[in-house]
Picture (cartoon, rainbow, N blue to C red):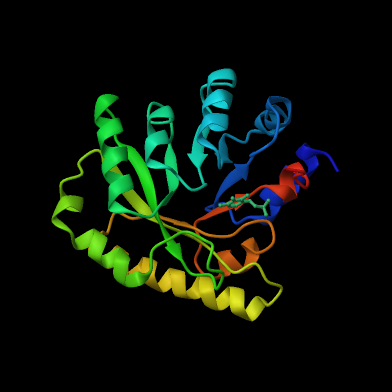
Length: 218
Ligand SMILES: *Cc1c(COP(=O)(O)O)cnc(C)c1O
């Protein structure tokens, strides 16, 4: 199937209020432009330098989302243009994003990444760490970062009950946080294999790569 057909099929399947991040990591400009021509404008990358290169070469009305783990020393390469950083999981990183945002006289939208999966290797905060961060004096002083919501990844498993439980847990934390910060409007959860479950559990934004662009070789 072509990228165009894949994308149209996904769009047809998504409720219209759900935002689709087309995950284009490792994919070429030509492949991205196939999705762009169908009307897709939101793309997700997991390597900052790769995203910066694509930003410099592709149409400027593309919204670039950083969905991967972010190293503090690389924030500067995307601070001019990134439209949403999904994987923020420390105050240190938020402070650096704030600092770089000030340099560019803008506000940078961020999601706080939660650890909900059973795997040890994934990044993210637990519930206690999330509320400690939100309640900290320093967080209150970060005027150039806009926390829009939460992001999380479920365990990589075929067990749908497990996946549903993890997404439902993330949604419950999101709703608690929204009580404190009513402006939140993004719950980023769901990938090619589990986005339907994620939407049933309250996702507002899905990050889909292989179901649009085909499997990645690297
Ligand atoms: C690669 C990636 C995705 C997309 O995964 P697919 O299974 O290809 O849809 C989503 N979220 C994150 C954080 C990723 O790194």
